[in-house]
Amino acid sequence: MSRPSGRAPDELRPISIHRNYTKYAEGSVLISYGDTKLLCSASIEDKIPGFLRGSDRGWVTAEYGMLPRATGTRTFREAVRGKQSGRTLEIQRLIGRSLRAIMDLRKLGERTITVDCDVLQADGGTRTAAITGAYVALVDAVSFLLEVQRIKENPIIGQVASVSTGVCDDQVVLDLDYAEDSTAHTDMNFVMNESGNFIEVQGTAEGDAFSLRQLVEMSEVAERGIRQLLEHQRQSLAA
Image (cartoon, rainbow, N blue to C red; front, side, top):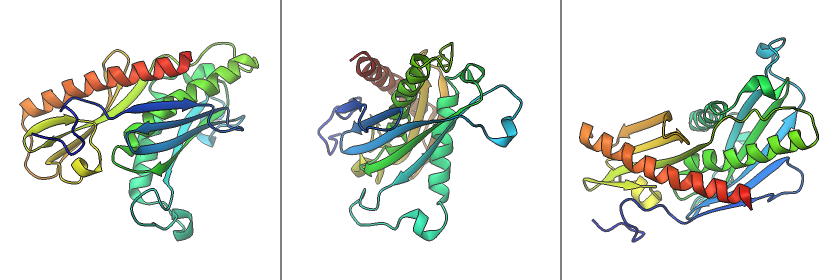
């Protein structure tokens, strides 16, 4: 099978991570998965949700949105419509869960870190790119807290990244762009930590049902891809 991009079945799109992309956020990252580009901005507030008051724990959450011309035609801003779509809510909850999975919230103290993930350009895999970029922005925000001595210990206890896999023409492929995502028989998103363990798996048979063999193969291909993404994160944070 020949992929529209010319990539090998288990090949990621070109990945780039640019830190400190904006001036004011405690952590800001421009991340690109090929032609998918997101700005991830981490902000710190010395307050917590009401349900955590008195718990001596902090909170990490996320918001997600697409700019009107992130796609081929202009879409309305959700703020104009007065409510977020179900898709938007589902994605930002996924990002938040993924980040909290690698945090010791007790070490964060009673403060909240919110990571805003804004899609500048969409070509498939926006949620997976958001998670990978949000992690780097979160690390920079926590580094700021440590530097100014607002916390004593690093609350980040792991690393997290995400990638999609799918089945196209009976071939398992990694990191689907829009051309593949729109026609794939199966589309799956994997969120994993640095130990290769799953944080979340989302999958749907869009056409034919997928087999156990294909599920295992998608998991293995995703793990290899995520290991590469984790290395991209480490290299960016070391720069």
